[in-house]
Length: 375
Image 1: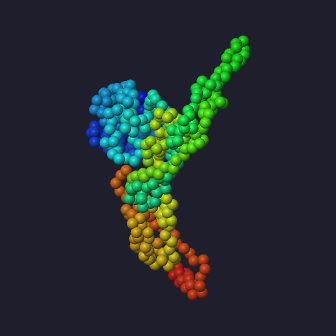
Image 2 (image 1 turned 30 degrees about the horizontal axis):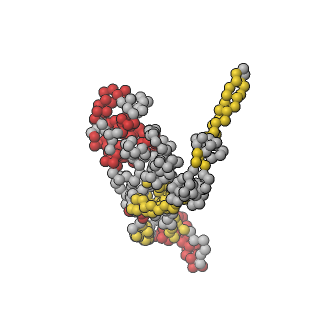
């Protein structure tokens, strides 16, 4: 699995060669949270996570680390994914993280996907992805939100067979129960006669390998029915835009009755909010001022995620200036700290004036011109 083309493991984790176990663990945790494929959607996130995980698996194990320090990549080149990760306790590192860090190879999951481990037995169902729009207040505090979605489940009437109660499917005689038919034909290529075989889906049973004489009325012979699901998921404080929260076993069912279902991935997005625009942990807001307030200064009451705050606008504030409410934004996910609320000032020029207002502006212009000439 490990090739000499990889970067130095210490360089990957950003630690010194004499770093202790605590420093290595903390560096890995920070990088793994940043590049986890279920929350980082950049094109290179998966490859970065793989090299980060491999580096930690070697450097966190005293024996593997000694081999690597002594012989470089040659000392660990023959390790399989199971050899690398079987002794790593990701639950201890990430606690109750709301996305899949894999539990080693016992349960597949992330490391099954990334490192290509395959298991004997019935195929696993496919994963599902649903989007959940979450209010900014919930993202700020964290806590439960309800996700609703629809997925196919085994029909309770026929127990997934597709046949009416009291009957059973029987093997398709056209394909011998395989669901596939082999069509052979002879072709002449030059002086040689070649037999070409084509494997196709059986047109009689449509690939099921069996036929149903009396379809189940509840599922129309499909063996599955759509079911509305309702689940509570835990939103971590400061959840990033596009973060994927994994719910094991709530994806699509396996194509085999004995197979396990896939997982559900809940993609977190921020609900549209008329008060703010979200940028990471920061919240932005356009604050419109009249000309007089921008020139003379004023006090404004603005919304926050916890209520309101009073903001002093200094005299002479220019259009486009930003006033910052420090620490009033969202928590920074995976780290300490809080984002800000940023108020971008927009100065509104009146489009229509009363006679009195026009007279005052004319007087102000004359005064400004006189002041410039006197300089």
